[in-house]
Amino acid sequence: MRKLKLVFLISIFATFCANAQILTFSKSKAINFQNTVRSYYELPLLNLDRELSTDAQFWADEMARTDVFDFSDSDYGETLYRLNKSEFILPRNPYLDAAVGWLQAYEEPEYYQTLCEDCNYVGYGKSENDFYIYVVAKYDKLYK
Image 1 (tube, rainbow, N blue to C red):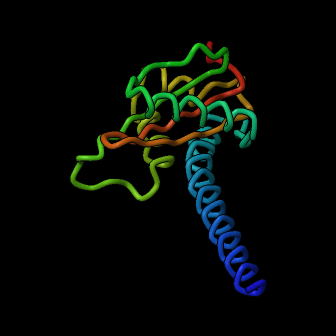
Image 2 (spheres, helix red, strand yellow):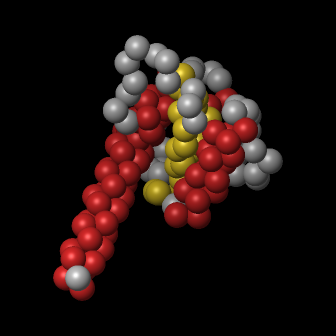
């Protein structure tokens, strides 16, 4: 019985680690895309920040819970993305899809925030409900 419990716990831990690696990989794809564009403009590259990711995750969860798509009261720079789950094709990586969308929004606040020259750190969060997938990016500075 002890061996069975141990095997069960190990399998749960392995699943958790695999999911964490997929999540980190998904966020890395988004930050790499943003950094490719930032390097073109000779801007400092962004680094993933745990505290900003925690704050972004909190806000993504809140938007999914309330089904309200709006900015938080945070002092951090922020970009938001909402994907309707009834779309024909859902992206494999919502973080990357959001990052591309923010940079396609030329001359919109999310475009300028993504290319903020004073920003060095970013954090991402993602949450969903029955209808939408929400992605939030929090930046250490608000663009000027």
